[in-house]
Length: 329
Image (cartoon, rainbow, N blue to C red; front, side, top):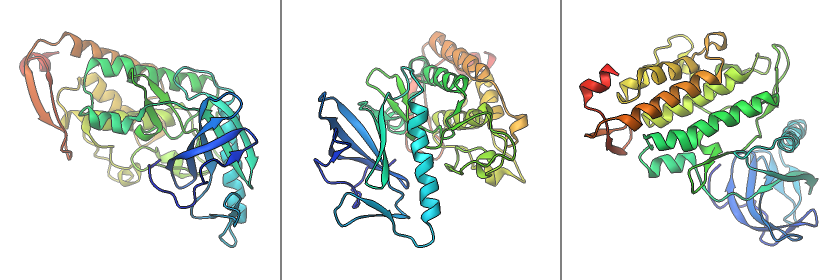
């Protein structure tokens, strides 16, 4: 989501469901508007997500109600609203320290609302830019490994996130992550031929997310996680999967960053396989390769290496082993 001044946002102090008071706009996307709010009964600060597909929706004259303003698209509007409400149902079943806690969801003003605990922090995108991509052991142990465990948890609950990317992860002050935005999530196993709504993010979505009837599973989220790791190590997401259909020449992350160990580089490349049946299918491989990378960065001998992320202006300076010893490792 992006932080901006959405003209269609609810006004300050609007009361929803006789309980939640809108305080101010936080962010908006193509499908929703997010507000900071307050529970009038407890005084707790909350985040309120309102279903508002900006290409289809408009605000009523009362500045509260929502309606489909595009002729002939009422059916699509209702399908998207139903998918939005599924997000609340899924989140209500999850209880994990690295998932933004669910509070409530309901329908009102001819649209839907999802209420979550307010979590102070910044997106992973912002976090990495501020820290020149945080290429150190602490980031792996405090942020990435807990994120891998969180994905493992939701998969064991029979849920696919289907939109893992840096902007959908909040990083708290202590470096721990919070996975959010389950708007694309779905129950699995998703069988071939079973229709699924299409929600994609360029660079982060596997090929199967571009088809309503494709077979999807944990390997689909692993693709997105591998793309996130590519962004972390290279400063940019991988080439979009649709551009790799006929000529897949995705270079190793080591061509951008030689200080990534060969095992982690291979696992990232494996996770980004275009064909799902050839892709890494277990988060255990990702977790282990990250643990090895953290161990290598912890024990490296003092020495200063300066390098610049490909196609970025961020420069990273950190301690590393002398080049010859690193390559031997």
